[in-house]
Amino acid sequence: RAKADGRHRYRFHDEQVEAEVRQRVTLIEEMHEAFAEAQFELYYQPQIDTRTPRLVGLEALLRWNHPTRGLLSPGSFIPVAETSGFVLEIEAWVLRQACQQMSAWRAQGFLGSATVGVNLSPLQFKTAEFEANILAALSDTGLPPRCLELEITERSVAGRPETVARLVERLTAKGIGFSIDDFGTGYSSLQYLKKLAVKKIKVAQGFVSDMMADPGDASIVRAIISLGQELGYQVIAEGVESEEQRDFLQDKGCFLFQGFLFGKPQPVSALTEQFRKGGLVLPDGRVIPVS
Ligand code: C2E
Ligand code: MG
Ligand code: MG
Ligand code: MG
Image (cartoon, rainbow, N blue to C red; front, side):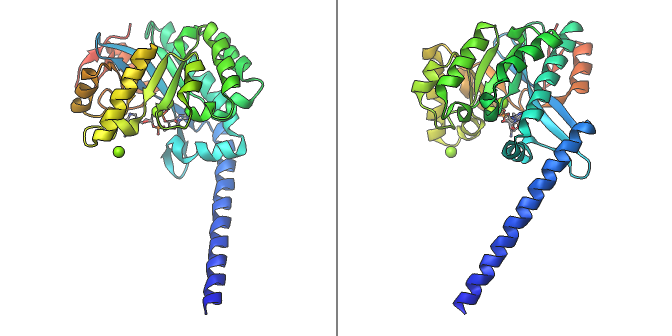
């Protein structure tokens, strides 16, 4: 009886694994088609300095207009793309698209000194063409290097800190900016981070969303802000949704924000329409000039 159950469970598990593999293969095939059918799209989320107030940047966030499943967020397909290496094609497209869009907005007289943030996948640091691709995207689109900010995660640094440090240093020398995304959630040591020529850290959303209720998270956020200040980094808080969170962060010395309180990720058309009418429209109705 026990044996039969065991066998049954085993077969069930087997079928489940098989179904998952099939699903992943389908998703990868669909991703290839998505390019041909132009189903990928970048949304842009504002980053605000509340002291001025000023729009300091826009983060490019990938969306997939899937023919049957609707608008998909990167969390549902990027990890799969990373297992197949196909993520590199996606990233090449994202980088070019973001540079091109930023260049177009600038040509229309908008977003003078703002940056466009592009998320990098750890796999990209392993390719020989990485540096050349980035420089080519900039020169082909005419975007000044200082307008590009590459977001790396601690995941990218883990395992090859020296290689990443050298790449970051070379690109920084060309004027490109770097930030560490989801700061505090990875495994990299401060020893490695110290070696990186990064000037900005993004406080991970999880700490921000829990800090008002959880004293532990509040302490971590305070510690990250002071660490940033001590090391001369800019510190931007991600996932800020309430005025209470904003006030708490400002009180601790953080004035750069990205989160629903200051705007959700939006498609190009929606942002361009706002810019033409006079600036970025915040959810509370305030307008921040962008020209
Ligand atoms: P991320 O880079 O940390 O981006 C921030 C994520 O938080 C975005 O989710 C954004 O929509 C969400 N967010 C921003 N403010 C708030 C808020 O106030 N509340 C809540 N609940 N969420 C907020 P999204 O767009 O689903 O992206 C998820 C992750 O996928 C990104 O996290 C990034 O790691 C990755 N990703 C996005 N685009 C790309 C891409 O082009 N390439 C790669 N490799 N990864 C990407
Ligand atoms: Mg990011
Ligand atoms: Mg993040
Ligand atoms: Mg917590």
